[in-house]
Image 1 (spheres, helix red, strand yellow):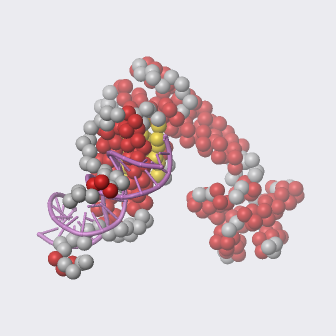
Image 2 (cartoon, chains in turn orange, yellow, blue, red):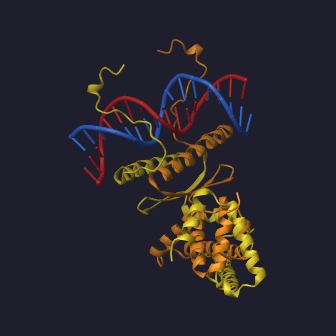
Length: 169
Length: 169
DNA sequence: CGATCTATCTATAACTC
DNA sequence: TGAGTTATAGATAGATC
């Protein structure tokens, strides 16, 4: 059965016991490979099943890896909201403060982002941005904008707009 | 090679394409199985490599599943500390968390206020403004905007834009 | 390190009960 | 539905470069 062991380039992978890998170098290699695999599985789960996954991984050497589909912070936010809803008064104060702190931070981040967005929008440079950078939602909103704008346009303006859209190139 | 197909109890698993599973029941089944598999892999990674993993999963029907080794909140907290600029990530006292929570709340309030101000300042989103209020220069600039925008629009978007401008009323 | 290889092990798609 | 079965697809341990 293994008479030709001598010509095998590799023994293939052996069954391993699930316990901490002793040798640090091996542990690091295995971590890299399996972390990759884990993220791949997570992304497949998202695509196949329309699920949302957020994952935070600290390596043996405490390096940070994240995965988030569609967006890690959004999902963590949902998680925090969902869990704080239930366990309002029965969690320990420590955990409770942790949660509320996290929540506040997340909201802070989100508010900052909104602020940045608004300020950006008002830089009056929006028309120079490539639409390639727009998300679906942004595009939808953009279409809505165009539509509403139209109702505000007077006749001459509309004509000129049409011209521009139609003519060059 | 497959002469005894008729006695196979199962065809085994077929290669599948990674795209959203159409049939909802299949999607749910696949979700359950793969979610289990994902959590198992995560736990193996933790044990084998001494890693820390936190995972939050929302099913297609938005049911929540969590995984955390050693503890999901601890890890998420580390993640938040790591990704935010706060430097003292190893404080752990109750008072410290409380202080930071209050601090975050204050910042949150301030950010919200700024946001409100900015939005107020620009109150009307531009597309809701009547063009009656625009100066000649603004109108010229607006036309230039439309023109430049057009060069950035892809075909489908342009069509939809034209539709909107053309259709109603 | 990190990429590649390959024999094996493991996860799982389709099926049955 | 949920749990079990089977054969195949996919992940990966150990080696090599």
